[in-house]
Length: 400
Image 1 (cartoon, rainbow, N blue to C red):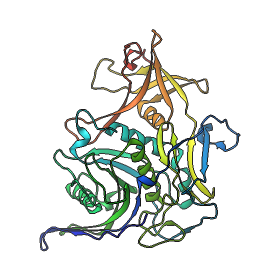
Image 2 (spheres, rainbow, N blue to C red):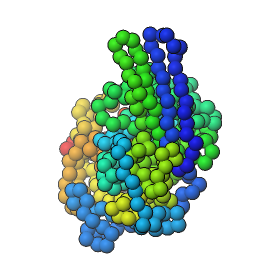
Image 3 (spheres, one colour):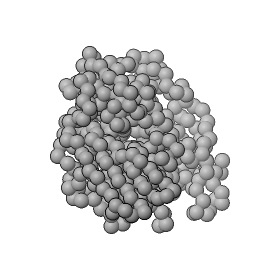
Image 4 (cartoon, one colour):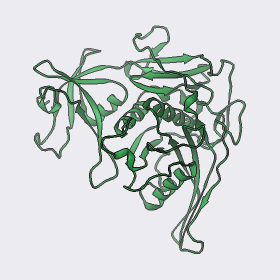
């Protein structure tokens, strides 16, 4: 979206044995009040039916096309610049401010935002970015800020850049030249803060220079980041999805742009689409697919997975997690056994896991996140949603 370039510098005193400088470039933005009401994507069609094509592992993939008001017409074209695309990207989620950890939790909660972002990345939503030379991103680490570290009430992109560069300088995040793959840091702003005018989110990069004389000299290494304004759960997930696909395909303003291009006001694949869709309960924004000549949302059909046993050793030790779960894939009528990590990834993709107790009670299995007292990094785990029965808890199931 059009916006004014941001050019801000910060440094420690010149002449110090350590000197740090950073320059923030301009990037793309999303305006939440332009979003249209989300359409529920039809996931009931079977393989071979109209609009449905086979997905990985025999699943059904639905590529929903949109041509509503505000969506780019089929004659739209893109320019493929020579600049960087992000590939094999790790996305770190950073929750800035004490308001994310209040009791009661904000609405939406940190857990809900993490679950939605994980679902967007684990499912097929990013499928169509491959035509542009990018690859789908995956969830990295979930961070919370140090208690007492809060953004300004009315923040700017330069404030977010300062958080990122200070975190790099402090060692919480790796320096750009130490990243083993492309990395995108996404900062979720807390309730009670106000975004810059007309923006619900923005992605950009910072040129990071760090002079640790005489051993470590980093000059203009680029760190890619985005921020998402606080809002309704649907708006947060929509803006996240928007900034995700744009960061992957045009992280520095010289990658993929929709015509007419602009070197300062980046015209990107999310900016020309206004339709939203709800896939397995998560709201996402459509984005331009040149191969489909339309604004699209890829989605797949969820599976119903009944967990009938678990593997946990020692069984009654609360400090050791569930290692594996087993059961029956009710949709395809086949048995399964998988690690807890694979179960989490499957839930993120939108598949439904549940437990049925001997008393007939049914409890949904969800992914939760726990922050140990000794760490600002969250640990994700599975558990049943609380109800009035103990018979349908995971720990009530027999050993696999």
